[in-house]
Length: 168
Image (cartoon, rainbow, N blue to C red):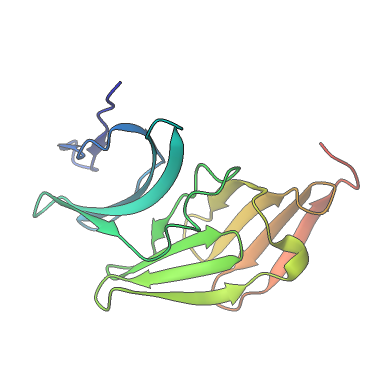
């Protein structure tokens, strides 16, 4: 089974993304002529799942794989990472141990904000970015009950908006 993903920009132009085998494409985030998206691929006899982040440049019609964090991009329970372009040069993504940024110009990952150890794990669900991309929210299920957490990406300050005290 092969999957074909198509991006559409605000002007209605369609862009076919490169096929990545049996894939699950996460939602795309646009900034100018560039879009960033997460792909989960399933391959091999044992159906190993691995993840990758790609940047698509609609002007050049090229797709570039972002490397260096493959072990963190494919843990179970984090299928939709929802990476975003916070400017023309920088990707931001929430991974199992904190907020990471990637400079397209320098081709380098930076661990921007580390999570407290009790938040580490593969149980971050429903990651969602604020419209201005200054905050990111998620449900954390790593503490034995569900917490709705919001992080300011500039300061790293985290606020728990809801703590169920038990699994939802």
